Image (cartoon, rainbow, N blue to C red; front, side, top):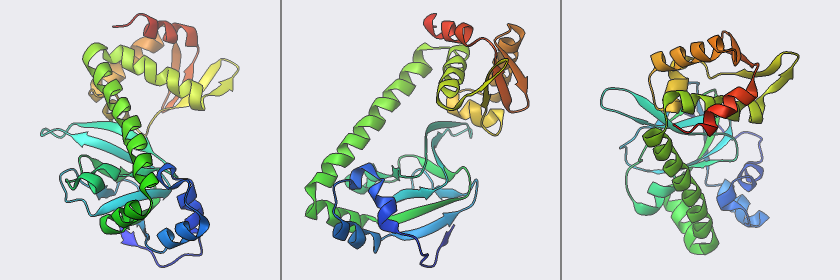
Length: 237
């Protein structure tokens, strides 16, 4: 991680994309932008670790970050992946606690750091920002409840099918023989997102291929029978 010299980039424009800062006028955004510190992170580099004292929040200007929890044995579970316009670590800025999860860069990323003191001053001057933070935190809480439900009541096969269907619908590319998607960098990363281990991901991908639902070519998948994958979701557990 490294602090960056002032670049010729309109930080205010970046901040307008952040839900918690929407509604601030140009002067207020410019005032806030002057207090942000741009920091560059390389792919895979840690932004902060779970349990560290919270010094402030981050806004993703470019690139993507993963928010994850780690077990004592080193297993990871990805809670969310955030891209440009997202804010990270609003909750500990409010409650004074440590960072509740770890964050690392997925690809080369630029994050804007805003200190806890400056953010709290902003909230005192503009109470509507606090209400927007509550909405963002509420949305993330609902997402976490969904993750708990999936881990508690569904199989790895079901979670993998749901992931593939979601990817097909959000970023799939139409091809003559189906819908093409690209998986995360490796099965370990995919396993972290699904709350399981790499071996079970590989095994279930192979089973889906043997059952004629998809074709695998490295990290590229062609879903040849989307309806069959969707039926996996309807079958519940």
